[in-house]
Image 1 (tube, helix red, strand yellow):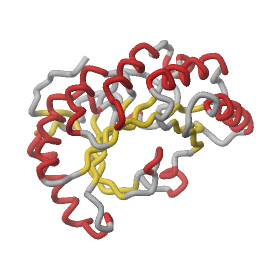
Image 2 (cartoon, helix red, strand yellow):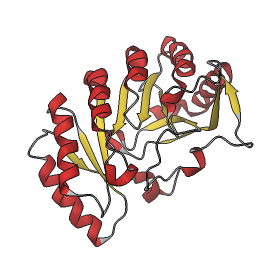
Image 3 (tube, one colour):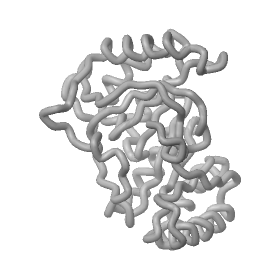
Image 4 (tube, helix red, strand yellow):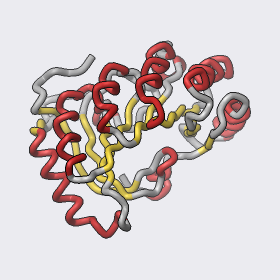
Length: 239
């Protein structure tokens, strides 16, 4: 599944400093590296500009990415408030470029950077390869109503390989069925009831809000830590 274009070159759309807008670490300053290319097509995707490689796509070397991260950090040190500098690799799907990522994160770990991987949570072989370098793994659990496929077996294997570094996220739309949602939650709880789950509404419509509360009540039966969190960066009007 990994795109072996060249382990030293990968398509990257942007590298920038901002504040994490999703999940349990929302609000912390991070350096973001956004890769181009994804192995899924979700109907709620909000980064379609990073879905496909095209003629305008920029390809960077591992050294390009490493130097850009260090340069951005040097300009934003004060925004980490004494914490380890954190780098979020996102996309698209960053694990498609696993060999490339491994080269970059090895160098970053030597410089005491925290490694945060945002992923669709199905590339279980790739996360196993990178696991020892990761500090935080933010893994989606995709529902069939969103991506057209039942991926729960892949998610289960991914969570096994992510161990105690992972938290999960399920995007809730008005079309989510209680049956598919329950199956997804059971897949997570089967690995560990201690895995944190974030329920992220796709919008703020009345129908979605009603479904969100129903899903929360279901998840709370099986997991110890369930949270409702919208995409905060959209509320803040930042990247």
